[in-house]
Image 1 (cartoon, rainbow, N blue to C red):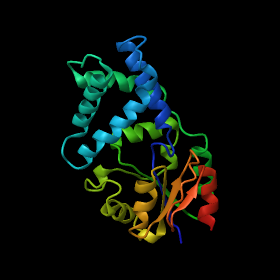
Image 2 (tube, rainbow, N blue to C red):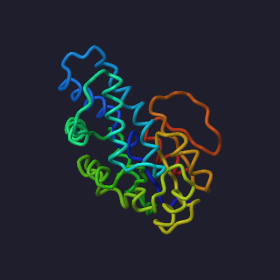
Image 3 (cartoon, helix red, strand yellow):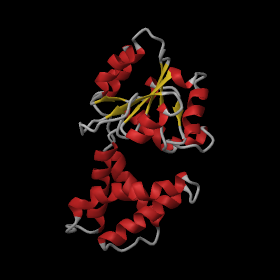
Length: 233
């Protein structure tokens, strides 16, 4: 019986992709107006996120250092001058990024449906992000009061998805067995396949409807509006 649902945050409840596109485009334009590769900056930024975040996850560097590495390589790849103060430059990017924070339209309605379903479900977040920023997003989006708790590596002993111990500790934080918890998110490995390896239920949110075949027992949905039906089944 499902007693709790863990939601990924970025690209599940929160439209990180569009916020990044806005933030990095505005930042680049402020540094180099009319840059010939401006249209490519969002995809490059996402590529560098994927490249540099694992160094923080593995303990190789701090959260702040992976940001510096990311911004430095971004500038080099675009032929921009590397800012002498990378932390200050990244803060400028964040200012633009934060102006575009938005929830997906299906997020709040589905959380309300699940909360009012009469099943007594615990609704929480499991994210690889840092708590200050992730809670700020949820607060701005009006979702923080609908979710409790917000679980991050800081509260899970430094464990990140898809480490098995991350999921096990998350279930323990909720006072539940893994098989009583469902995790839903946009990353097939981190949010769907990974949790099933420890006995959780994994639901992959395929917002882009890729049609990719996934291994059982993972369930695929195209929008969060399909989630209550999955839970009821």
